[in-house]
Length: 389
Image (cartoon, rainbow, N blue to C red; front, side):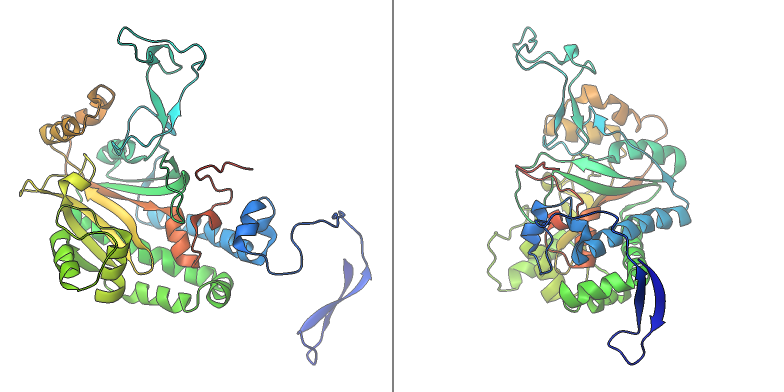
């Protein structure tokens, strides 16, 4: 459109464009899926290739871009090294067996060894390989050289969880810092979250006002409260005691030794403390093998950051720096140490106390935008039975 920019102070809008000529750049068919009406989020998921043109998803993906930039900006200002960890790996960082396998073997002509198991020595990498579930293990190696590092990239979990909070492909932010204990780890996580929320509130004001008006009432006030709050810190044992004494009937049982569920986490943050809460020192049997065993031999130096409205948003720990304790933990859950010798050896060649955490990028984006489904903060979501586009 070519024309004149005309001020209209007496009109319904402050200005208008008086057209002198109009050129049609591209035509649109009459059955264009985005009509001049309010579409449901469920419908828009079916046309993920077009939904960025809608008001809601324009705001979501602008905010996603700014939040990603803020992550790099924060770590750059703090002197961290950015590490690109591999997408294909032979190490299961969580030891949970929820990794996608990578193979070029012909399923119609699978090779077998003398034990009648698939012979992965004939595969592309000469061994069993997977899509990464975490860049943490490789980040630890770099932290022991550079002191402060982080990785930020896609991760994959073959979890058959068809919920609003789970996706099979998502992005993780994972800082790792040498000489940091569990308390230092919580300090970093708190400062990081507050920085990111503040940055988005300042630099995405129009988008945040849109979310506040149309997606989640009082969103901005809630986020501003988070930034101003001092996050609470309690042990897992105290958390269990508080939940047992609450008198609340939960769907999942409360008992020392069981992991906390989302309903428990939200009760702690929304009803008891009314702000974010760090829970530390979890039972060793509900946490990963690489977390440092505490002196009581029952708990590990693990921490989860719980926030109102969501529950867990960050999971982290002080890593086990003692090779003997690490191998014992690996043996207990049956991890193949042959593929993990490089990781164990980090404890033998100048290892030290170190810690880190993982932040699910999309879960933080959900929290900041008020969107309730992880499918609505991913450009093209990958979930159970869904790999379209």
